[in-house]
Image 1 (tube, rainbow, N blue to C red):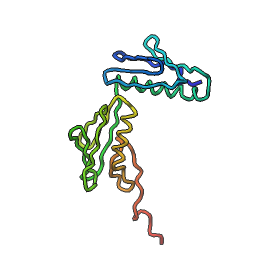
Image 2 (cartoon, helix red, strand yellow):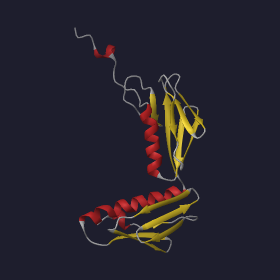
Image 3 (cartoon, rainbow, N blue to C red):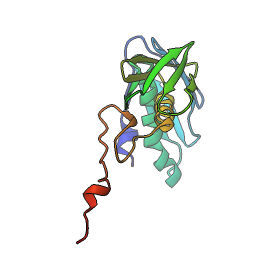
Length: 181
């Protein structure tokens, strides 16, 4: 049995949950998220909490029970508090700016790279830090990864776009290898 799947999901103040069959709509101050739960798992709303139970004791149902609970918990957290990822730009002449809800990156290419923003994602640029925020954890992480993929950190100098606090292990250059006498 799933220890995670057994835990109820607490619904905070200001968050509304509507369950109709396998469809769940969760709305709050940060937005509204919808999800269709797998048919093996049954969601129920009791006393301001969401409970999940499995309909049949199959291996598939047991394996998805905890996953569905975690995804629903992320939805509740997203509409009440939101999620945020921060990226850092390192390199001389590397910069980012916002133009008409699009992100413009100048990261050493001959041309600036323009990234179109999804409708439910917000971001801001302050100095060399890009902050991506939104209600859907998956979309926030995917958009942050898309930004990082434009210029991942260089393994020799460390230039590029990285997550804030990410440590890059730098490789030694030619001089550090040795002369081999």
